[in-house]
Length: 222
Image: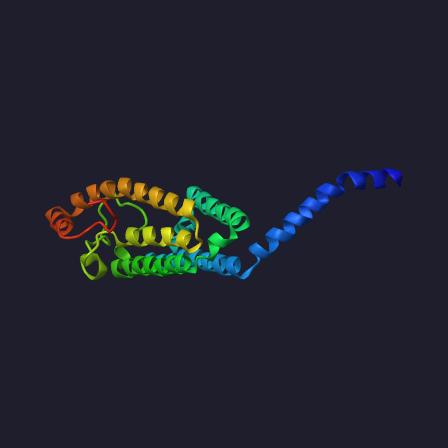
């Protein structure tokens, strides 16, 4: 019994510190600000992936859809995990940072705009839309130049860039906002020229003319 009492006396200060920390961080994590922002984030992610999967099932058929169609890669999951880590660290250390509702609501607006642009791209392209770069001609692959494609060659990329950066602005995550913008932009900087190499092979002068009168949809990428 004396041993237990002695052990308690030894760890009691540490337990008090832990309880004190929890009493401080718990109201922040489960407060209105965090609950609203995190709920918006989770709904945005769920809506983005589930609706993308639904459109693929509709246009491509069940046999052509796999778990990869959810568009959740290891790098993507890691990026989202890091953004949540930043959020929890900042709401604990700098809770006032997350109370910037003008910034957060701007992010929510960008999420909606990005999601809308991307889904318009999928609906407009129909069976010609794919998440993979086609390297060989396909009977279902047509050059789509109407609707949103009349103005933007890669509206799905444009929408994803706006959506992904918007999620981090919505969370008031300054580090992740810059990181997401830089990483996604670099990804498309490499992907777009590679994809358009094949599109020029498939559609020849028709694509050259189309490319001259439209924008890629990604800043600083012609």
